[in-house]
Image (tube, rainbow, N blue to C red; front, side, top):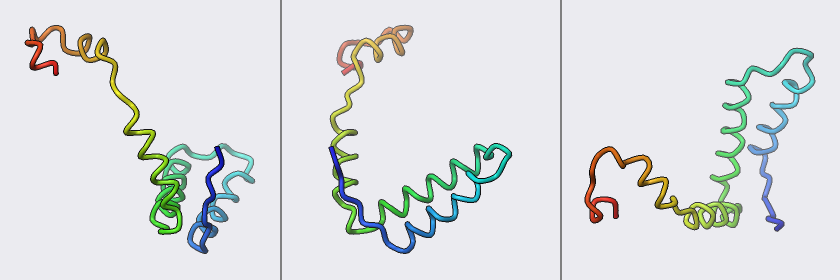
Length: 86
């Protein structure tokens, strides 16, 4: 699947600000990398021309259902009724 993404100046500048971290000899601090990636994603998501990307991500999240056995295993010790599990 290919999603077209609009890249505005904010997204471009955010991306370009990450490049020096990858050119340095020492490892990138994980907290910096996490912050920069979140910033990049945020800028992609707030761009109104990238609604197709947000729609796709929402469709993935909506399609995810927690398997019932995971719910039962996480709560078996509470002696819940069937209606409470539901």
